[in-house]
Length: 344
Image (cartoon, rainbow, N blue to C red; front, side, top):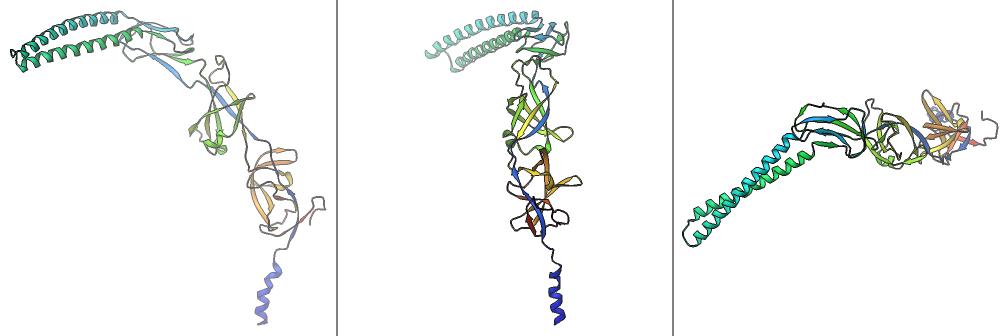
């Protein structure tokens, strides 16, 4: 019985002793965390000019030409379309005569049918002829309108201030309808495409709450890409370029913007509280029960004698700055002043 009692109480003599440690209280980091994002200038939209009719290409501007809105950039021959217009007009006159004759015949048959001198089948036949003549007139008028539009579009004008970036044909070529002629790039419609590391991405809503700046000017986030880049490490953020005159902003030019992030889980902790284990930063926190906890932190930067970290640590938490050696998770600690001699 005595032996059993001894075995039952003996382990208490090996309980982990209370360790004396020095702590410092965590403070809030009031400044934003700044990320620098690499960007490139891009032209989001190009405009392709194509043939609207089968016609010979007479002239076009070469690659590199800068043009103003409304300036002629390409021209096609109108000789065949002009002849087609005259033919359609002739057909319309012929159809108008035919419709007038059909209307006359129908009215005569209608009068005779009222007197019982024409059958209903004869009246229906004349009505069909009149309807057919009217529909033919409508079709020819639509053909004329379409041909007139095609004729107007044989002269191709720039829809905005632009530069010719690609030529797909040459003067003298007989172009088919829909065949490309040249491509224009706007000299004003330019944007910034910026790379954001996927590790810094939470969701698009969170991004809307960050502050973006370019050379001290605020930027408004317009779009967030729905796919990663070829390295699967970055996603793209899209901004309208803030320059008032974008003609001299070269497409492909590399620039930088800053992203300021506000976060509740960013705090300032003393250097002495953070230990590097391999590639991971960790710290000891004393919980409300007076026991030691081991926490992992992400170091974002440094200010004076402090690390700026992102973690579950909150302002007011107590971190161990002396006495970490031999400390274990869950061990009771005795808090001493930082100015006191180092604990054993």
